[in-house]
Length: 295
Image (tube, rainbow, N blue to C red; front, side, top):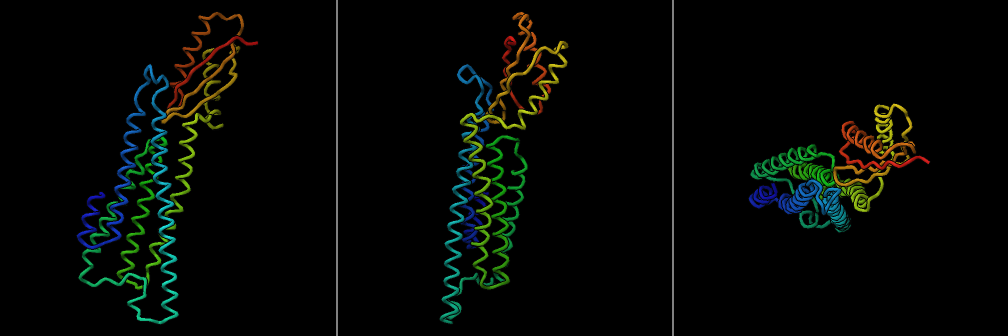
């Protein structure tokens, strides 16, 4: 898509489209990072990585979020610079009442001969929006895919701004302020969620514990399983811990059993519990159960 936009931007002398093509090249880099991270992170556990490769996804999410965060700040600063520049030139134009063509900051209306090129540019932008929205909807629940999907959603908003500027330049003079204002709006939309995804990736990499909502779900599911497999009701859940690792949640459960139980009984209970837990839980997880005698 970046190559197509670059070719059309050069062919129809659209600086906006050529700049967006350059931005599309950075998008391709984030897509590559996401693809490598999700492919590597989905590998099964090995002897060297007994808990899987989910942290690779977290690293990929950190990289994609950092690209989006830096892009948002860069877009915001550039938009603010051009907005202040346009405002200052506008003030000078009013004060000096000089020749309008030399000092105005708007985009001149296009001639009828340029209508075809504008329609081509708008068509390419509309196609980009459709592609980005499809990519946004194609996420599967991991942090790296969510970050990359958000990147595509922000890009689709950028395309809307491009279309507005192109159409406004055809109809109205002195609309140069529209582009930087739209850029500021999009940068604000990009920075906040990008910062949130960055913090989420950092928490995953630092083995931050799972949220209370997930713990509550695990607790309810565990109690239901114990009621089904332990008719005596003597086995109790002592603690629930967990961390996020890519698309998986690593759960560690500690249970207290009666002191007169044998090791075989405890091992049998542990095996039945793990089988039922993985079958019933609606999130992708890997559970470890530790059974010890009750005090």
